[in-house]
Image (cartoon, rainbow, N blue to C red):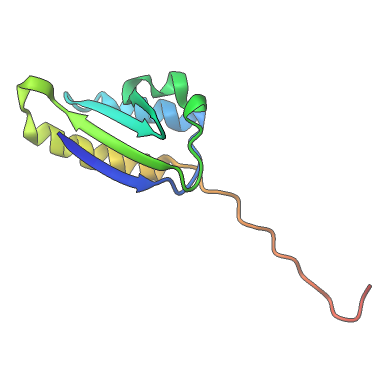
Length: 106
C-alpha cells in the first residue's frame, strides 16, 4: 500500500472528477481518496465530487492498494500517475483583482 498526502492548490470540478475517474482505468490497483473524514474510491469520484468540496488548502490523501495480489509495480505507477494527474486537474483559484489607485482623484 502506498500513501501520498498534499494540500489542494485549486478546486475540483465535474470535468476534473470525470477525467480522474478515467485515469483510474489505467491501473489494476484500487485508488482511494481521503478528504477530511470521507474515504472514496477514485473510480466513484464523478458521482460524489461535490460532497467532497475540494478547494484550495483542502488536505487530500491518496491511498493505493492492490490487495492480496501484491502488484507493487502497479501500485507505484498508480500512486505517481494519479497524484500527478490530480494536481494537474485542479482548477486554480481566481487571481485576486488588483486595484489601481490614482493619486489625486476622489
